[in-house]
Image 1 (cartoon, rainbow, N blue to C red):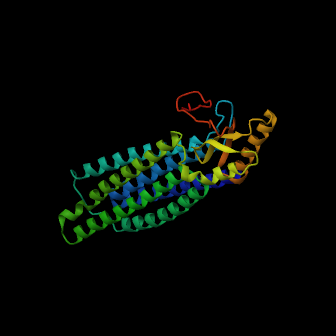
Image 2 (cartoon, rainbow, N blue to C red; image 1 turned 180 degrees about the vertical axis):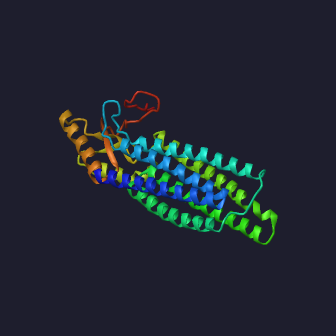
Image 3 (cartoon, rainbow, N blue to C red; image 1 turned 90 degrees about the horizontal axis):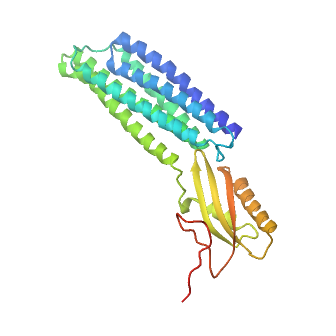
Length: 315
């Protein structure tokens, strides 16, 4: 767990340092070259710095052990960090779009050629950062790192759009094609739409994760098999695996011989918990409820009611 936290935080720091360097470089070059698209791209990279900081804070919070107020741990902190990233992207998307729109009503001039090289370099670096952060997020099952990786990918799209817009403006100025001068602000509008679309996707997935989704049965088959294989377990009456950030919490109800002692039933429950947590690293905790096995009147869980055996009436 400590190794996971260390790797994840290194990934966040790569994003922070890389985005600061890129934002500063693109802002300076964009100002020198008088490129609105490149300046908008710099603003996008600057917002990524805030997003990476939010991710770093979320990772550190998620790594804290369970306490009295948070018995299930702090794994949801990563989902909250991902939501913060999406909100920041929404603000940046609107800001880029507004600035680009206003550019249509001001005198336009073609940016300098150096802006092209800045956009190309940004796209290459950001794609490398995306691949590193995305693969790391998948490896560590970190939603916040994956969200942060998609921020980098949106910056790749942003840089490509800026490159096209800058190139169109330069060609328009060189060959006296006035309408091509609008390529730079048009690219800024395209960037804003890409950023907003990315923000929506990240927010949708992050909000879903914060609502305690239960894994579907097809994803819990291996977990159930391990629990069923524990000596003394006669039947699994109910099985739920809840996603809690980068880990899972399992609630399981097992049927055991009703004639054994309470201590024996407790030992079987401990073995179920140990088996699941030792064989599945993503399982952080397991709550086991012991039911008396009855092949005539099996246990049924009724949503919204007290958890007790429900007996069917035989006619």
